[in-house]
Length: 160
Image 1 (cartoon, rainbow, N blue to C red):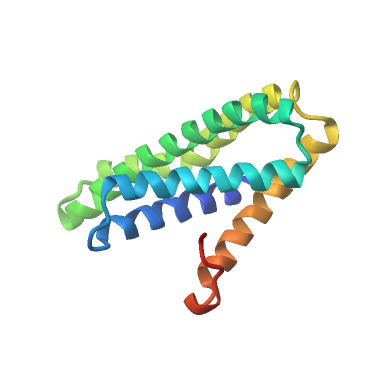
Image 2: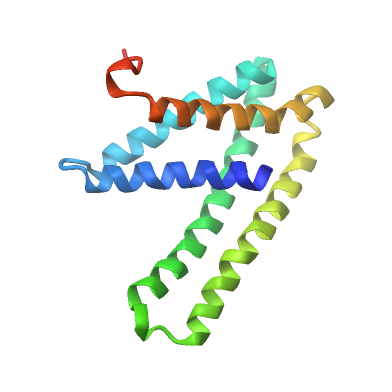
């Protein structure tokens, strides 16, 4: 389930990033700004859902962001290989297809290894209850973002 959540978040971020790239006037700075806003919103959401103290927030989010960056990089590398093979189409070799397929299959295991490594660190910052609620809060965040994305544009809350 946590792999599906991580995949959903990364996919959502990648889709929005691609959308911003294709949008007229969508600059690299626009994407960075959107990403910073999304990260800030996620921090606020998780802090509220987990009931983090200010001290916990100061310790937790730098570690959490490091974990997110590592899993994002793993995804980027696997998707880069996948895209390369797709672009070659019929000219791709069996070995290239095999290596890309392996990279995509290994991705879940690598993401899990990264998450387990950081889980040990989270144990020193969060209470047992907060630790338990973390995955639930991440799923709820993803669900909230997906529902917002699906909502008709006129019914979405406007930014201030």
